[in-house]
Image (cartoon, rainbow, N blue to C red; front, side, top):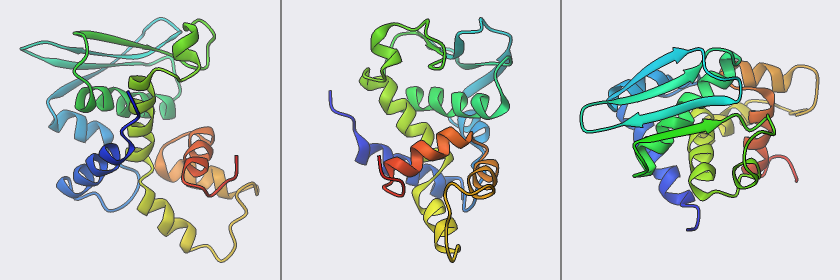
Length: 175
């Protein structure tokens, strides 16, 4: 299966329009709840980022409270991506990519479902047009200066690493 980038971009734009979101930070929890998910923040095993449980009665997104707030925010968006993009098993558990306990496929980001959920989360939390506006407003953007990345990451509620990855994917930072 090829990554459905265009579908994900359109889905994100539809969500931003439907919920009248015009600036960062994107209220991902509000969107997830509007899509029928209940969000539970709870203590999970250290290597578990979160999970998506769904059946005919309920949809639950679980988020690990041991992780940093920015990671929890990304996990919520990632699980929402699974909910909206994939008709998967009843219970889907995502293990933290930073810990090497994951299987070889998921740790490399080669599982298409995981890659799509990551792309969805990054696109939703850091919409392309929002970032373009932020970069356009800067006379000179020193991406690796002391202030730019941390300030923008804070504005979007993401880690500096997630922001750098998004900027790379959008072509602002060469590989």
